[in-house]
Amino acid sequence: MENSNLNNVNETVPNNHKITIDSRNAITITGITNVESASENGLLLYVNNTALSIDGEKLKVQKIDVDTGIVEVIGLIKSLKYSDAKPHRSILKKLTNKQ
Image 1 (cartoon, helix red, strand yellow):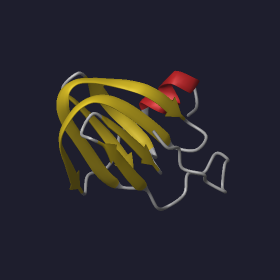
Image 2 (cartoon, rainbow, N blue to C red; image 1 turned 90 degrees about the vertical axis):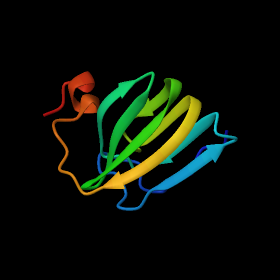
Image 3 (cartoon, rainbow, N blue to C red; image 1 turned 90 degrees about the horizontal axis):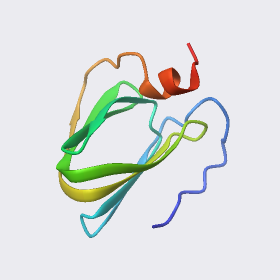
Image 4 (cartoon, rainbow, N blue to C red; image 1 turned 180 degrees about the vertical axis):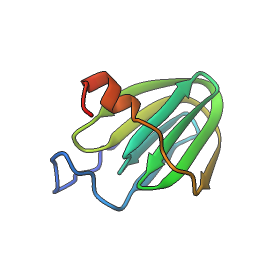
């Protein structure tokens, strides 16, 4: 799986995002600002103030990079859906004890 090369690697995540899906078995998303929830059947992520839900089976988060906003997930990807919803406190922030 190919990683995106972002020039702005610091605490602020870029405004844009990129989604790369490899044969419905792996997905890499850049520009993530918040991870709301993650389970074997789905993830709820935020790109700025836009929610991105990923539905699937046997999903497993392989990598979360809080500095660049990159998330890598493996498993069967069934669907992606955007919606305009406000994010809650980030799991990434909870994991790193950032407010």
